[in-house]
Length: 372
Image (cartoon, rainbow, N blue to C red; front, side, top):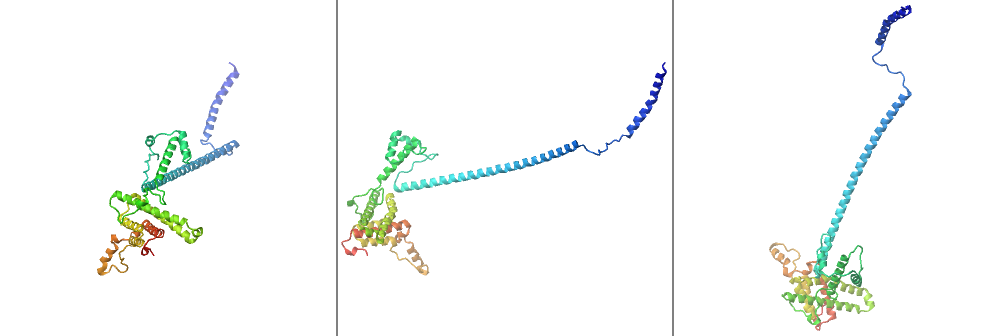
């Protein structure tokens, strides 16, 4: 056996236990917790700074998004409130427009009823007349309808108007023209047919029959129109200097005012609803004026205007006279009709003015019948 090999083997065996002990001792000396580093690298500092920056940016981004969401929510709420306000305004405007149209239609129906014109045709949901009414009459082609509208001095076509609307407009214009032709040509246009001069003589008392009353209303309307025509003609025959003077203009204005104030009376003549309490004195005034008894006619006017009962003025509700005074205040047959309403007062005063002119136009033979 080689001596060198044996020596190396023995030496290796002797070193092995010592190495194990040294490794065990080094293991016992290793601490369980790592000690903090005394320094940091630049890369670690940069990474920490970047992480803090990213965290701050994320926080700011969340705050901005939250603000944008709140702002968007407020804008949406404001837009909804604005839409609600606009809808409310539109609804109120539609209701106001509808109410205004209903009032205008009501006034138009009342005017037509007062003038004796036909009633307005009923409207459908769109505010138009039904198609069945248009189908009842014959259709008119485009060219002929255009010529007829131009003959009436009306536009041939309105903006957005179709053939049916043009046809309806033409029929409405022709009906209106036909109704206007039925009105008399006197100072006060009326639907009552005028009577000739020989049939204008009125009886002293109004009749009770319906047909006789209708003829009486025609007589009264014809008489007042005749007086107004003569009055207007007499004013027109004056000299220019007289017409331009203050008194001349005042006389002309009195005639115009009387003509305007008599229109409500004519409307009541047309409807035939004038009560006997007013009809009888008006008939008496006209009857005596036609006989040129103007003083008697003026007495009838005074009776209907201020009455004939003694009005108890002063101390009336004392003691035994209380009942008598109250009865005098409320007697219907002695009431002054001129105080009932403004329209009645005005046309009664206009009748008195017509009576004053009739005295100058047709003077009486008896001078005692001249009003002062």
